[in-house]
Image (cartoon, rainbow, N blue to C red; front, side, top):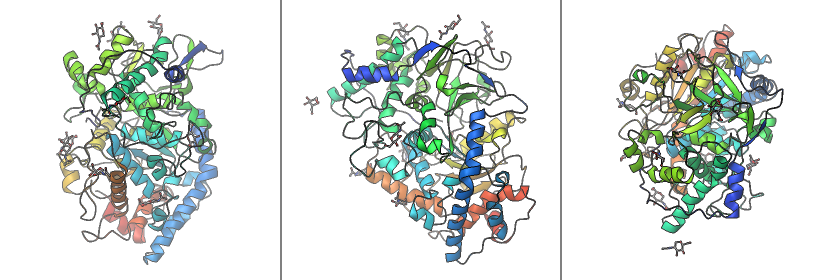
Length: 609
Ligand SMILES: *[C@@H]1O[C@H](CO)[C@@H](O)[C@H](O)[C@H]1NC(C)=O
Ligand SMILES: *[C@@H]1O[C@H](CO)[C@@H](O)[C@H](O)[C@H]1NC(C)=O
Ligand SMILES: *[C@@H]1O[C@H](CO)[C@@H](O)[C@H](O)[C@H]1NC(C)=O
Ligand SMILES: *[C@@H]1O[C@H](CO)[C@@H](O)[C@H](O)[C@H]1NC(C)=O
Ligand SMILES: *[C@@H]1O[C@H](CO)[C@@H](O)[C@H](O)[C@H]1NC(C)=O
Ligand SMILES: *[C@@H]1O[C@H](CO)[C@@H](O)[C@H](O)[C@H]1NC(C)=O
Ligand SMILES: *[C@@H]1O[C@H](CO)[C@@H](O)[C@H](O)[C@H]1NC(C)=O
Ligand SMILES: *[C@@H]1O[C@H](CO)[C@@H](O)[C@H](O)[C@H]1NC(C)=O
Ligand SMILES: *[C@@H]1O[C@H](CO)[C@@H](O)[C@H](O)[C@H]1NC(C)=O
C-alpha cells in the first residue's frame, strides 16, 4: 500500500528561528484568516442518501461544459480517430459517428479519468498517458488517440496523482511537457508563474550541503508559523505541503528554488482555481482530489485483505474539488464549501484550502511510520515532527496526519465515525488499498459511464502494478451496494498479472450490469513492445533528472498506444478504433444500437469476460 515513502534519513537539525521577511510573507500567505460568518453562509450541505445530489455549482459547471465545450471536443476526437483509421484502412461503424454527433448531450458518453498514487513514478505515468490523449500534441493526434482528454468531464487524482492533477489545474492546464519541465519561454511573466515540477530537486532533501539543507527545513517550519499563530493545528502535512508547493504549485523555478525572498506558492487555494481562465471557460475536466482519514473509532477488523493497508475500507473517503469538500459515502454524505474549509464553531475561515495542503494530505503517508511512538521518532520525518512539536507546542494532536477542523460535527452520529471529533485526521488517499481514485467517479449523480483508470502503484517486486488497487475498489463497492456499482473484475492480482491485464489496455464491464461504468484500465504493468523497462522506478525515488523523465514519457507513449500488440514488438493498428468503441459503448447501449463491425471484434479482444 505504501505508495510514497521516504527512505532518506535526515540529520537531526537544530532549529534557530531567524525568520527572514520572505518567510514571514510566506507564513502570512499560508495562514488561514477567520471572520464572523455572514448570515447567508451555508457551511454544510447534506448530499442525501438514496438519491444523492451534486452541488449546484458542480452541476452547472458540468452542464455548461457538456453543452458548450464537449460537442466540439467529441467531434474533433472523432475526426482524429477517423483519420488514423483511414490511413490504416480500417472502417469505423457508423453508429460511433452518429452517437458522437448527437446534439442532445445526454446521449453523449460521460467520461472520467482517474490517475493513481505511487509518488513521482505515478505522477509521470499519469502525465504520460494523458499526453497521449491530448489534442494539443500532434504526435498523439496522428496516433489516433489525441483529443480524448478534451472530452473528459471529470479528472480525479490522489497522492502522486494529486500532485499531477493539482499542479495541472492550478497552472491553468498547460501541456504536459510544459507542466513537467517548465514553460518553454525562459522569462517567467510573474512571480507566481508556474516553473515546472523541478523534479531534479529532491522533495525534502534538496541540497547535499548540510547547512543549505538545514536552512531549507527550518524555512519550511517557519512558513507554517502563521497558521499555528492563527490557532490552527499544524502537523507534518503542513511542512510537507510547503515542500510540495515548490514543485506542484506556481511560484518556484530551479533558479529561485532556495531563494527565501520568494513565497513559493503560499496562498494559492483549491477554491481559487475556479477563477482561472480555463475553468471559467469550462475548458477543463472537473478536478477532484482524494484523501482518506484515520479515526479513533474506525473498525480495524475491516481493512482490505491486502498486506499493509492501514485504513479500513469502511472509513469515509473524502474528496476535495474547487467548490466542495466532503464525502459521498453513505455513512456521511455531506459537504462543506472548499473556500470555507477550516471553519469551526461559527467562525468562517478562508485560505485553509491551500492547493499545496490538499496535495499534501492526499499524499500524507507519514502516519504509516507511526506503529509506535519510537518508530515514528526514528523515522525519516521524526526530526521534523520533533522540531514542529518543540516550536509549536500542541497537546494531544496527531502530528503525523493532516488535521482539518471537522465541518461535520454532530452529523450522522450512528454511522459517521468522526461525528463527535473536533478534527478530521487526513492521510494518503491510497492507504485503504484503493490507490486509483475511482470512488468519486462511481457516484451515481455524476452519471460517469466510462472511466479511464490510469494505475501505477508499485505492487510487484519489480515495482510494477498488479491490479490490487482496483481490486480494493471492487471490495469497497461491495460494502455499499446501493450507493456504488462496479463492473466484475478478476478476483486476484495473479489473474491480472498472468492474463497480461496490467500489461495491455483492458476493458471491464462490457457484458454486464450497465448501471456500473465501463472501465478502461491502463496500468503500469510492464515495458511495452519488448523494450527495456524504464517506468518501474521505486516509489521512494523523489528526484528525477530530465533525461530519465523523457525516457519514461517516450515509453509511456508506447504503453498507451500499443493496444494489444499484434506481434511482440508491433502495436495494434486497430487500437485507436477499439478505444473509441469502448468509449461510446454505454452510450450505444442507451441508444439501443447493436455492436457491429470493427467495434464488435474490438470489444471481443479488449474486454475481460
Ligand atoms: C508529444 O508527445 C510526444 C510523445 O511523448 C513527445 O515526444 C513530444 O515531445 C510531445 N510534444 C509536445 C509539443 O509536447
Ligand atoms: C500559474 O501560472 C500560470 C502560468 O504561468 C498562470 O496561467 C496561472 O494563472 C497561475 N495560477 C495561479 C493560481 O496563479
Ligand atoms: C554550503 O553552503 C554554505 C551556504 O551557502 C556555503 O557557505 C558553504 O561553503 C557550502 N559548503 C560546501 C561544502 O559547499
Ligand atoms: C469548537 O467548540 C468545541 C466545543 O466547545 C470545542 O471542543 C472545539 O475545540 C472548538 N473547535 C475549535 C476548532 O476551536
Ligand atoms: C510532543 O511534545 C510533548 C511534550 O513535550 C510530548 O508529550 C509528546 O509526546 C510529543 N509528541 C510527539 C509526536 O513527539
Ligand atoms: C464518540 O463516537 C464514537 C463512535 O460513534 C462512540 O463510540 C463514542 O462513545 C462517542 N463518544 C462520546 C463522548 O460521545
Ligand atoms: C499485489 O500487490 C499487493 C499490494 O501492493 C501486494 O500486497 C501483493 O502481495 C501483490 N500480489 C501479487 C500476487 O503480486
Ligand atoms: C523496487 O523498489 C524497491 C524499493 O521499494 C527496490 O528495493 C527494488 O530494487 C526495486 N526493484 C526494481 C526492479 O527496481
Ligand atoms: C539521469 O538519471 C539516470 C537514472 O538515475 C542516470 O542513469 C543518468 O546518468 C542521469 N543523467 C544525468 C545527465 O544526470
